[in-house]
Image 1 (tube, rainbow, N blue to C red):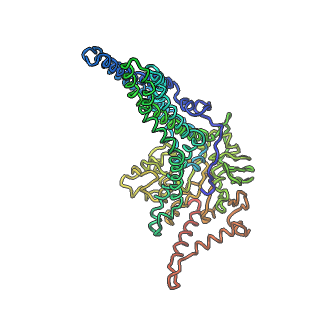
Image 2: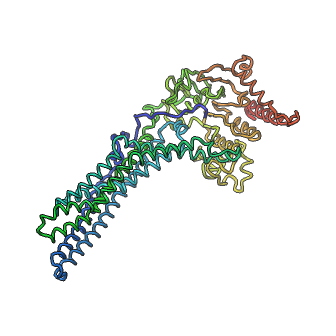
Image 3: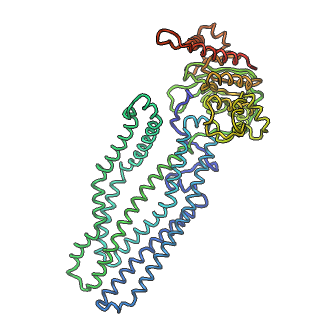
Length: 638
């Protein structure tokens, strides 16, 4: 639609599930969707921590085995407790695995419920937003936000959060274990850990925190540009272009590459090299510590046992720090995903009237209406006033961007006016219950869509309780008899999403049947013949005449042949009403409409010249199509 502008901001006053707004951010905001299952998250974190602490027991058992073997060397048979230590290590390892499995069960239950509640909250909120929201936000974009972002938060709760609890327990247990046997060797190991943490913080703190947002933004740009490139491949082949013609795609890849190179090479190369050197080389740092300690050693058996323990246990330090890094990264990603979900939940909703009023008739009135799209510099409508008496037909025409579609969309409250009022039956549409307003208005758009199902199901979508005979009558009134006749299963024929087995004009006629079956007293038409061929246009015009009979019709049109029979034509330009009257009156006035009509007549008479100055004969067919459309438009009950 020509007047739709991208919505730049989101309202901060969003109604959410239960009527309460969720406060806070990050993890607390995510957990607010868990409800009563939040306790499973906490239980899972505790069990994961217990499992991690149990994982230290085998290391202690190894130390005990080495201690006993060194103490009785070379009489190994005297070490009678080795099997006991082995069984203790085995049992605790198995118990640790089972406890961790229980932790994951708990967190997965909570994660699935949280994801379910999050999707429900988004769906319920989207049911209350203005229908115009879906014009400025593509369905694919909304799906990516909800499914992709919910998936990230689900991974955080199901896996990363219990690992976070286990990691905290690992760090605490590691610090205790480092100083339990020999504080000097423990200090050497801790020195490596401190350097590693410092390196990690230098890569993930300060200005570098913004790189996750930059990464997501770069990925989004690359995905959008890539989709555009794939869709444009036929154009590239037809016109013999090269991939370099898709500069946006090339620039998106280059921007992503530059960002990744700057972060990984310029900012992270040195700290990551130091991190890996010290973390993976902890055992090397033990050597100078041993050389310093060795001169004062009296109990060499214990000393060697302690060294063996720290040499083996040093591997835990690397594991603990890597887990900390991954948990931090996933937490940041989940926070970014939650902000996207919050953006959906912050979309402004339509307020229901406290005391609904009922329209007296099917008239429509615009009372000094002004409206601006979010972020737009100029208003789409500026102090517009017009009336559509009950049972009459009023057409909105004018240059593209003049405000025609915007005006039509304000009647069913696709958007709410900025000032003034739109009235149906003498009642402000904001004072009519939404379900009653929807019952009062039927829509036919230039890009109507069909659902994946049978033709009968698509027509019944307007009124599910309609009988088969009523749906068939609506199809006949909408000039769909030829469509039904060519289908092997008639109205029970299964068609794909968007009517993939039908032409654009056939889809439009079935959409008209849907509107006829709804039997609403008001009909809003937005360029219903935009994508129709001449034959389908004539049929659609007959169906429109049947639909308009006895109803109030507000129609948006670019093809002026379709509005000649309207009771009144309103010309909109730059959001203002510049002319109004019948076709003959406006043509005689010599204003904007007269110029548009002259241009339209010129377009109808246009023909393709032959290579030798002759005519191809294209003009007569165009003139005939226009004449047929005029006849259908003029004959209201054709």
